[in-house]
Image (cartoon, rainbow, N blue to C red; front, side, top):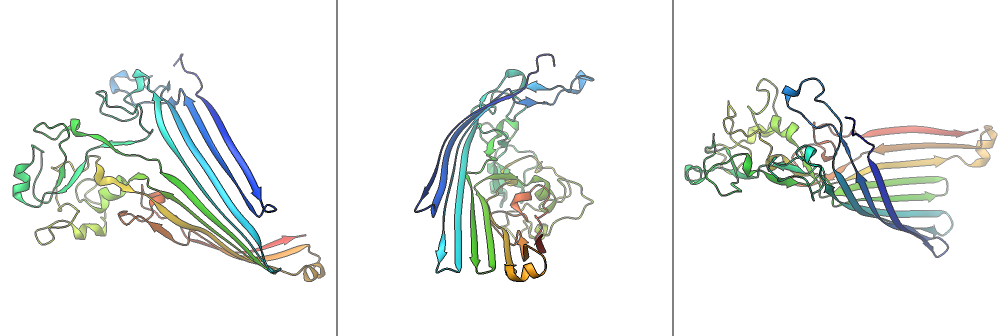
Length: 336
């Protein structure tokens, strides 16, 4: 592409660092505006173009407006017990501010004018799943939907015509959290020390298609693979209140189409790290010709609190369903 140029970013920050009571109360606050122009993108192309179809372009421009706030307090209780507790929160709003016509369909939308412009980048576009058809009367009352039937997913008719088709798609989720947060706790008592760190994000839409297409359906993906246990709770006459569609040998209702069925709330709070340590008294360390000797044990990702509506294993890695592992460490730190 002879017209290609580097993308550029301009950022303006307004910040404040503060400390009071002999730096016992401390923290910072910041507001920023970040603008990125001419984002590089390699959009899909029709096969008839052949060699040379894969080409980089300068695509959308976007803007982030966000904040970061942290505050902490530290001190001592008597002379042997010390503490330092701090928390932080940050959030931002993202939107696409410019969309060149030659790449406007590369960021989602219907290709007919409903595009990403003015919306957060990487937003999800698809159908709205309106639950499960429970009776034949519901099926008969619904507009034309190829493959519809009792126990099948019902899709919402957005343009008020008489058929469910690609024109009934809309923007169904934002892949940006409302805010992120963390909490650090550092404690010390004589030669013992402890560190605890929590981290989380709130209200983010995540795409669970790769997992739910295997755990909730028999025929959407490979019919010869192992399936998830959720299939055991699929809709049936004896289980009419299930939110999982009935088992089906063929995907006649096209339930693999991207819809709100695969969009879930990925909020979580994780205990990221806990570490307990003990430092040998200096007099003993010197006899061993050492400046400092510290023993410690730690654990990472010890537990996760997630949204009640989340059906997967770990919202932080929802695409393939593998949880972030719990890790335990025993260590020795030596300073010569």
